[in-house]
Amino acid sequence: MEENNKLIAEFMGLTNHHNDNSIMLRETPKGNVVVHVYDLDYDSSWDWLIPVVQKIEQDCEGVPQEMLNISLYSDINEVYNAVVEFIKDQNTEVIGSFDENGDLI
Image (cartoon, rainbow, N blue to C red; front, side):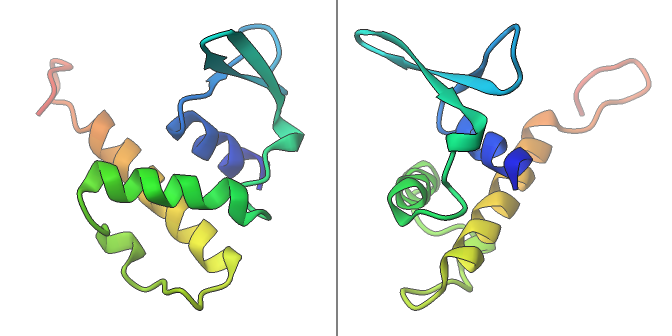
């Protein structure tokens, strides 16, 4: 759960602290805010998870394939798993494939 919460946090713009993997940083107009990884509640709080769903829908200009099977009646675990799957798929697409020379295909 912790690694998936970190994955979501990175998608939402938080960055890893350069010296401590248990801390992430959120940039604000007033400076960086420290967020402990164990305080990331994407897996257990709708208040944390819904903004992620909204960002996905905004970025995709609609509902992506990975999230078509969830509904207003889905429990948080179903939505959380769909979000994680979507982000992992997006990260794979961004990374892409490389040829033998290391050039992006």
